[in-house]
Length: 229
Image 1: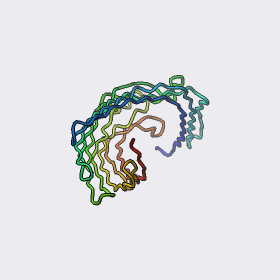
Image 2 (image 1 turned 135 degrees about the vertical axis):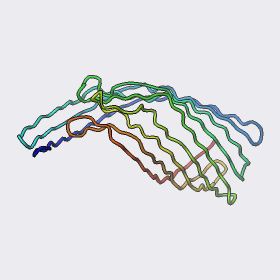
Image 3 (image 1 turned 45 degrees about the vertical axis):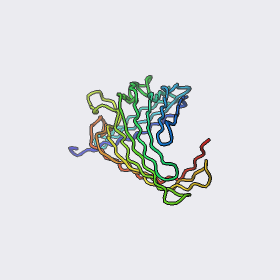
Image 4 (image 1 turned 90 degrees about the horizontal axis):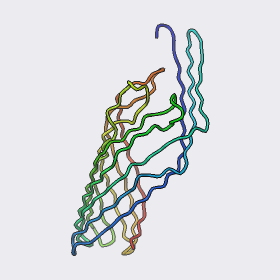
């Protein structure tokens, strides 16, 4: 800009330990239908600390500045979650399922003792949905597929606070895999899932926070085992 250049390097690390408790209940309603509910309590942070380093270099006229915070108290919170589900299963033939997940809100800053290094984290209440289908093609193997949402719990980001905020990305996805039933209680799953979408993000551009468009596309391969008792 105007014959000069500014180079900004930034590194932020957070290590956190949290206790998360989940209680669930499942009940069969006859031969075909079943329902379930689970509640995940808000996380209880046991320990958290982080480091932050930022270096700014201006080419013309030449100057440098640094910000460093070492072993700073860091905060992370996982919101509460209530999940409700219903399924219709014809044993050994096919299964339909529908899940609704309700998330609570929370608001905090991850580096409360370092205002020049903190990000503003705000989650509002949000609901997400998942639909699943399983079809047996042999007594020992089934195909599974699903559709799901991962809607953002973040508000539309703003640069007015001068702080980074959560990305507002509304993601939608699908999953596909096949499952080998080696025993009545044991399964092996092979496949993957995709989720993608677009939205807005706040990033440090030059020496100030800017709101920029962002898109995300993720495909994850999955290998899993399950044991039911």
